[in-house]
Image 1 (cartoon, rainbow, N blue to C red):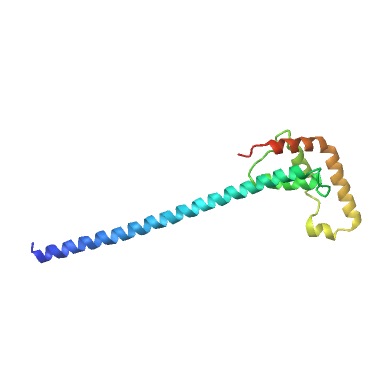
Image 2 (image 1 turned 30 degrees about the horizontal axis):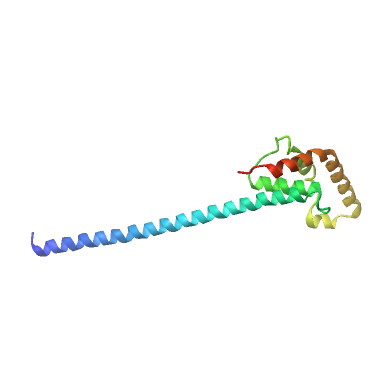
Length: 153
């Protein structure tokens, strides 16, 4: 083999090695970026989870302290937050009342629909909500104590 052919083959080998190194470095950089995005997403999920847990605790602390917050509204909000956290406490004896109140009020219009209801319909629905709250008040208070002490980890 002549020196010229050897030099060409050697140059081609260096070129292949160089191109390979370029693609390896590029892939490593992409992998690092992907890992950073995954970690940022996981951190965002942790923060969102912490916010939902804090919201449950704030609602439970505010109930019976804030006259504007009813047990019905608290139950609906807490049940939705528990659903968002993928926590099902519906079978737990201390929390069942929250699920019962929320289920008992699903047919009641909310937000804009509530505002468009005639006063007689609003009164009827308020009476229903008050009856539900009265029926479950002791269990709701137990749920409050339980959820304030619950470890969501």
